[in-house]
Image (cartoon, rainbow, N blue to C red; front, side, top):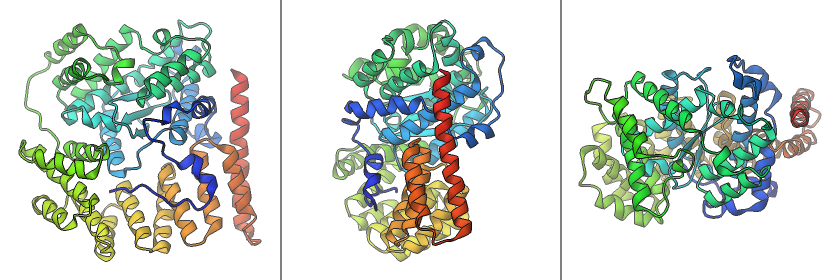
Length: 509
């Protein structure tokens, strides 16, 4: 499983890489201001130019074009990466990415690409931002009772994107501009991640706009998202009844807990809306739908992630071992992870053994086994297992990240460096991979590599001044290597171009 990284080779990383607790992250005034500013910046010129976004030709394109939505959405993504307590758990990320990819293939979203951000907070929510950005709180796994229920929320958010509801809502707002929208999105982002009061304040402070007039989609858009999302569910072969089931789960939480799901702050729910959803689902033939074990395994990871202590998680999972077949397997898996965290590795091996015996090739169980070996400091066994997995899944995020982290723990820094350099060439958009690469460069004493990896991290988070600083520092260490100097100089020119694009973008609005 992913471990929180501790090594920061240079102090400049500390303010950006610190992962603030969910209870305090949203009350930092400076953080809110930076968040709002970041949302107003454009993306890298190269990436924006490479994307061909179709012009839909509707009235909303006159207010904010698909290209402008994409540019704004990329800065929402960058702002999240730099300001929100994002999850670095690659298993959860990979699972969500695969599920959303499946749903997107059956949705009306075009092009069928998206960027995913996973927020580490127990608040249940998922949200969509312009430019095909999907955000998911890890707390959603504490609420949804099945994969289809989770899929129903994600399909709903994909519908908001495919129908361009944010842009269409702006048509009636004559004075709306992108900077204004950016400020609104800052508040939406805070609400989405669980910072209700701070999110409300951020929105109210943006051009004096009130929550009700800007934040909530109107009733017709919610109905349309319900309808289109349901169609996506059916096309993907998923249970249409799960949509109403998920609404019911959220309504129960709203009735019986002090803090209802944040999802309901931006998606108001009523009995009539649930009834309408149920009626639409009844139009489709009834049949049995298989639940997916993987969802319950990921939910177990989320329970451990948000447990007060690993010891408390051990008690909880022990008490849940008597449930249904799927829940028993998930509880056994969660118990093995929790035992690993508490150092009870012998029992962790015994707990995991029946799962591995039943499904010896299941990746998530193999990763758990490697994590137990690493906790025991039996690094040879852990690395042998991970090396085999890497050969089977050379581009898998979870395998690469856990392998790299285990190599670092084992002191195999050079191999870890090689592994991460290969991975970021294949998948250059994963900010946590660049973070780890900067760490391992520092551990091997490759300060030039530290500066280069940091520069890429800061580019992904939209902090262009720090990216420039890291590249200038790197240029001082090239030892007259003409090719490397040319590469770094070109990258510096790229970053300077990104900054200029940011300034020009701001002037347009």
